[in-house]
Every structure is written in C-alpha cells, then in structure tokens.
Image 1 (tube, rainbow, N blue to C red):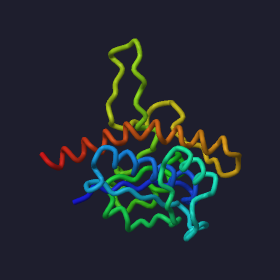
Image 2: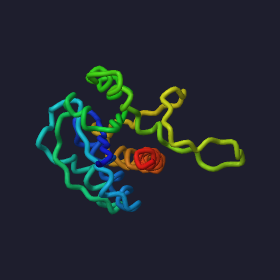
Image 3: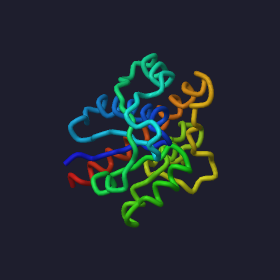
Image 4: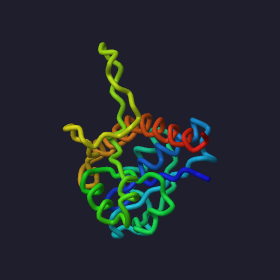
Length: 180
C-alpha cells in the first residue's frame, strides 16, 4: 500500500504545486515512486481546473522540475486515504485542522517548513530529527508569491527544496515502520 502525501495551499496554483513537483522529484531520486504517492490541493476552489501559475511553472522548469498540474480543492473525505497532509502556512494548517473529521486525521497535518533540517554546524548536538516541530518560535510559513513578482516564486521554491530533504527522511522512517 502506498504512502500518500498531499500538499495544501490556498488556491493550488502556486505553493502546493511547487511543493508537489519538488517532492515528487525527491521521491523519484530516492527510488520510492512505487511506494509514495504525491499530490496537492487548495483550501479553496477558486482555481479548480486551472494549470499552475505561469510564474510557478517557469521557476519549476528553470530548475528541472515537472510542471504538469490541474488545480483542485481539498476535501475532508481525503483524510481517510492520506497519510500526511502538508500545509504551506499556518492559515492552511488551521483550516485543515478544522476540516479534519477526527483527532487522528488532525495529527496527519504538518507545516512543510517544520521539516527543514538544521544545517550542520559547529555544534554536534544539533538535532537532525525528521520529526516535525510546530512548536518552534521560527516563522514556518512559506509566503504566498501570487501577488508579487518572480522573486517570490524563487524564494518559495528555495523554501520547498530546503524542507523536502527532511520530509523525505520522515516519509522513509514511516515506510520503514510499516515494513517492520
């Protein structure tokens, strides 16, 4: 049975499709395509049926990522089939928690940037645990680039890439737990 991850932002045309594309590439690089399914959705249906924002597509293509995408709205019934629901900012996190039918479903929801691993530094005691932490005082939101210029999409892509390594480690850990 596949491990299913869904990235969620507001309209599913900027941040979450970028996260989906980057994470799908990481899953493929790790040889896990048959074990991990990746998709995305928006908290609202404003852009349902549309392609990703052209600026998101441009940023992804420039960095070698696949850009096929059709926007859709997240449905509460999806929790039953998903293992992990990744919110791109605190607003999405709160919306998804309100939509979660059960407490167990709410525990599936995490902020993407909570998976960013600390860079190796002079302190060997620094944790590199793949377990997310929403309790840090750091700003864990991926800012919405929609109303800005191309730079915002590049910044979004950098944030998504930075979190993807830790997220992949967490998913691997879950897959190993299933196999045990």
